Image 1 (cartoon, rainbow, N blue to C red):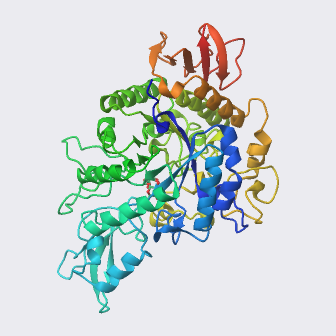
Image 2 (image 1 turned 30 degrees about the vertical axis):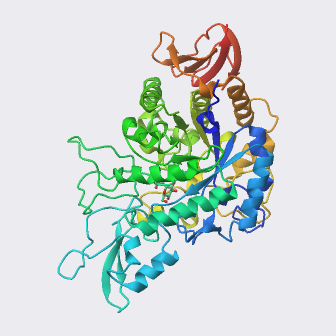
Image 3 (image 1 turned 90 degrees about the vertical axis):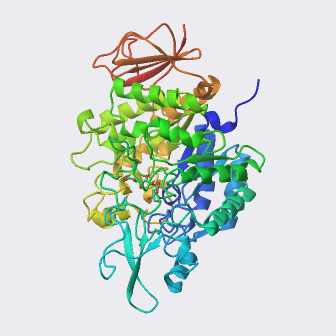
Length: 544
Ligand code: ISL
């Protein structure tokens, strides 16, 4: 039999370098810290690590604002540290995927400095999206687009002669100018960046804002919702800043670069595109290998909703013959432990939620564990976000003064931003910073209740979330669940039940405990009660 490439059913663990482990004691995580903790990931049983950006950056958007794509930011270490991480990962049998941020550079990137200095009409400006403003003196932005983080997507520059001049486009923060991907120098540069990291031995790339790199010609105004998970308007119009045809040419080109290397190198798209049939166009045979499926981030806790996500995802992926992916948490959204702790009707769509009222932490954790077992039993690849294996909730009561997400600043605090899911990992129960590092305090404060959620506190403790994840990942591998399929069973609409190979999966979303089908219970997200599966729990059962 032909073996599927490794990424088809891989479980890929996202490390957010600022918040994983701090070796040098400055309160910010770093590459040597990650290397020293890779054993945790090997013991957990994941296949690969995805590292959020660690490149040189002024850190205005936590590294998603890159000023040098070929170097490591001093806060995270050196290129030698990156090599050491790759070597250690290889020794442990872990693959490494790195983040690529091609939609925009940092405004500290030498290209942007050169563009400002060179003035309108220059070769240097052609790499970015500079335009003259509207109005008699060009004092209005060139169009009405909004930044994803709030406010206009345009900022006016001061020209070399000291006068207010052109405007540049930034779909995110003003420190993140969008590149113009129709410029051949931009495309050539990124080929070289891909090769730089492929030559160093990375197994793949997570491509940031993969649906945003090409804008509709003429940059027309857009008078509709500009939300990021973007479909078309009821009349079928598509927004001019997302999901344009031209992006596919870029991925075809990159695919050729990846395919020229041995060893199944892969790319996964971060593309907020709806519906699934549009998303899977990124997965046509000569483009991306995977795309994050964010539908679980929007789905409320309900049997019909979750089943609908599974069905629409698998159907759309079957058409292009690509494996699906499953994502419950990442560094941009409220952690699923917190998300599922809201009553379903108030659960924040898109996952980014209000911090008031507080979610119900116990309920959230119970549902999060159930959702995880459900996700890990589905065919395809799964993405875990650091700390979810500990059942970490969001830090929903961070003081405003410590918040660093530009989204918080750009909306004047109307959106609390994404710091709550970025709080450093507790490794042990003790000060300082619960084992995160030797500094007296981590870059974001950790709630004292996290002592009990630390790796050390959960290791070997029966029923802990860490042991649940370890057990699930071990079984998933043994039972080859990631390469299987889904066949729905069971009469009840409020109890999800399906067979994947010889394993039956039951998720109880009804309001009462339910009987389990015949067979041996291999794993359950909550203790059974009198042999029955409690409310908000999932079990894996060997065919009886
Ligand atoms: O975080 C979001 C909502 O709160 C998303 O809209 C997010 O901005 C979007 O998913 C794009 O995210 C990626 O690119 C951004 C960066 O800030 C995110 O961290 C990154 O995942 C700009 O590079």
